[in-house]
Picture 1 (cartoon, helix red, strand yellow):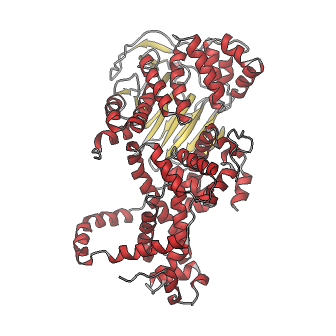
Picture 2 (tube, one colour):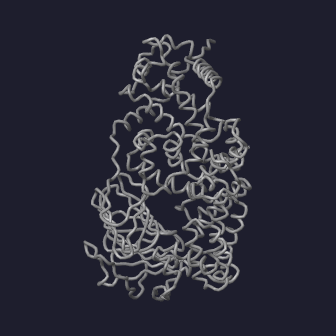
Picture 3 (cartoon, chains in turn orange, cyan):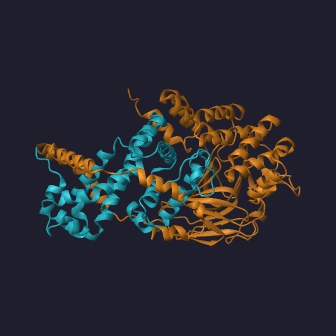
Length: 423
Length: 217
């Protein structure tokens, strides 16, 4: 049965290698008769060593807890929301809109997500109160049904957009580190660097953040860009109107520059191929035309595209070379700073925590307000705890919590700070 | 103190030979507190519990204690088991709860403990007959398994190492079929990523190179 199911899976990549699984099955977890006998003896000793005369005391102490447990068990657990994919490509929790058509999904409480063409993201935990959607790249519109206890969120790069019940759109360009959130109804809270604290958007407002430039703007949405109740097939790009003061003023300066789309329309553009999801093509072209030549001659943007494509293709050898070329040839370029972070990730994945720490340190020095700062700091904290111990990691944990109290590594940071040191 | 091996107690089970007893009759015997029922349950399920704990946790310092926790909980709670036929699932679900509790505790401890400590523990758990190259591969595998969270790790082991089907895995994890599919998809993708990135373990993929010459079991 098991093997049948595995063989029917459309993507063989999704199953682990049988040879390795067989190796584990063969050598791990064997039980000898002697182990079984010894275990049984220990179990009996453990049962006999209990002190029954004190059980009533324990029982008495447990009364409130048991009462609470009883009440909890009597309360029927709310089932998680159901959902269905109404259009687009769904694979292992990832929803992807093809380059020419949108994707959409609908939840049992009436909430709807609509992804513009070329957008993709991952549906995280779904419970009775809502869900978390990790927008990896692109533009999405959300129509969240307002109800008591609803909890919805969109993660976009370093940003978290918390929703209660509303209609709004999110646009996240991972490559450029630019976020746009336009609110049409209800209320959303946006947090994440470079926003200090939380920005609460009012109806009709649009937040724009450029992570690399530390630029935060809140402007009125142009009337013709407000999305209707049923979103159009192709979502128009939003136009920025004159700046207005935010409800909660972010720390970064409010700039007046307009957003500009990437100016990269060359026919052989690797960045364009990446934005179209053609990662294999980028790596193939680089290799067929001579990888070394590409590393020496290609632009910073192309090297960045090659590094991304290679990472997505698990070609860490190519990614490593492209990132190193970026560092060597374009030392002052923003992509070279990001390369330091990605090099750290490659080393960490390969188990070389020490080298990874070096690159994370380098990235944090070069890009103290960069898009990956939260993750780099979190990983630096974890790596330091592993390699040097908790006392060395504690200052990093404090720093992390000060800057990213709701970040992915916040729980780890709290543990490092709050749990007493073991002597 | 009376210490008896299960085998000495098995004959007390109704029906004579406990090896022939169904899970349901064993569960009913446990629920009625019949002598020998606990021992027979241990005999039948201890290998399963120990194996699942060992394969999920990858370290042996607590597997024996945790196995005993599982049986203590089982014996204490078997009375609430409504369907005696489901004894095996019941044992699995208790084992999964114990595993997840341990992984949560370990998550906290891991921050304070270098990875290499776990590698050594994994090494002790591997059967002594395993060739050294395979031992090294297994140690690496368990190091990479640390990259999964407790739910993903447990689901991954139940599905692939315990050879459960999706329904069984979902039941043991006490989640819906849709949820277990998503958990497994994430776990598979993450593990395959790190396995492929590993210079030794990538050789276990059918299309992968085998740079270290590790033999494939």
